[in-house]
Image 1 (cartoon, helix red, strand yellow):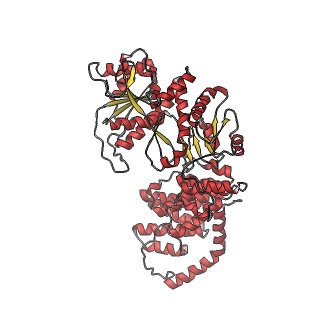
Image 2 (cartoon, helix red, strand yellow):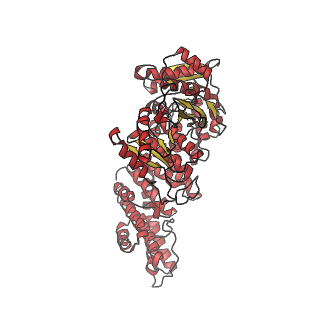
Image 3 (tube, helix red, strand yellow):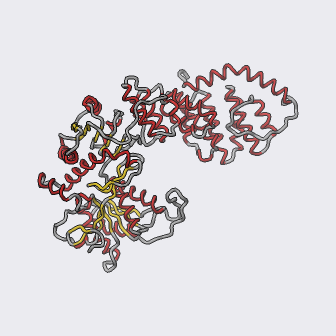
Length: 606
């Protein structure tokens, strides 16, 4: 084909130069070993994918005198050698024999040989097609190394550089130390041809942590116009985030700048929607930031993210001399900011689809997914062992239910029971079906905290977690009593902030005993601050107060971010007790309250 990849070109050039030598050595070796004579001494077969150190004729001769698995292995080695020597006819004749005798466990090996033959025949698309349906779990480590090498070569021939590098990165850990240097150099050579924007676009949750580390580092190294100080800062941050990464080999010997052990910024840029349809939400966060900033010496600058190109906004931030960023508020804007690769710490006020786990990036949101995970922890701590999750059958409901179930399985080793509802008319039937369900993983073994688990025994439902808003909760909860038996004790029922009702309204008997998780700020937290806020904004809604608390806590957290990421104790705050995961995600433990006679009170104080 007209434009081969680097490794493929080298391979074929080597074959051309060495072909005469291989033929000559074949004759000499055959004469010396007696293979041209009638008697051949059988040898134990090497690994199927060991380095080729003989001509194909010698492998074929051994295949002729071997039996069983050894005969299969020698034939595989002979096919590989014929292909390396460019003799596809001999290779295909032997592959036809293998195709007839291969067992089920040997079929993936035959498929890989066919894929290798397609690559020699300059049909890399066919190579990838053959590899796509292959069951890699049946391959040895060396077989998997060969699989990834074929993928890399095929993608490179197709000029799919990111995919080729990804295959080599997946191959790296399985290689012997003596082979890793060459593999690492090839990855570097491939990625060195890509621009920083291409490398930033390549990062994502569909890539491994090692691949994202490679793409991130090379996007820095390939940025020719990056100021030296900014480059050093980003490299130091990368080094801190990837202490064991194989690409550390390409870091400069000395980094002049290292990320601070804590953050004491002199100028904080806050990126919020301050105009347009989300201006009210942006103003709520802005007022929270300003309230928390009182008495501090650092400078604040607010930038309107509504309708502005994030690349241009980032340039404005850099021109302002800011050394820390809070925001943006919207997921799409967070994604766009991270693509600019800011050379300063960032506390984003949302969680994008892909969250680079870099030492200077943090994510703080009020997502219902995180609240569901907190509900799972609370229910486990309260002694429940088989919860039912009842959620709307829409994207939000299924996502939040899945996050609860993920956290529950991590704690218990068994699945929660998931039930869904569609509309009011079918609620009774939906509740009946949900209460009759069993765990999806019944009879399966589930690990707990990384340790082998046991087959979970059948358990009755002992609690309910509802992913509902306040109106849905009021409507649905009585159906659980009715369907089960109105005389039976109500199942303990838990909800999150979507079901919050302001205290002081007319009591709703149907909600008696309902357990709700929300930020302490909405209950009795920081009463003096709340009094001041309500005096300035007497018509503030619950949603406005939540966003105010988000801004307040974001500014307050800034100097504590690195310590929290390293595992320091939780910080009491308006939005909850705050910790930070190793990935930089702010995690909230909420305050749990119980509904009683129109008010929210601590559980057990009725």
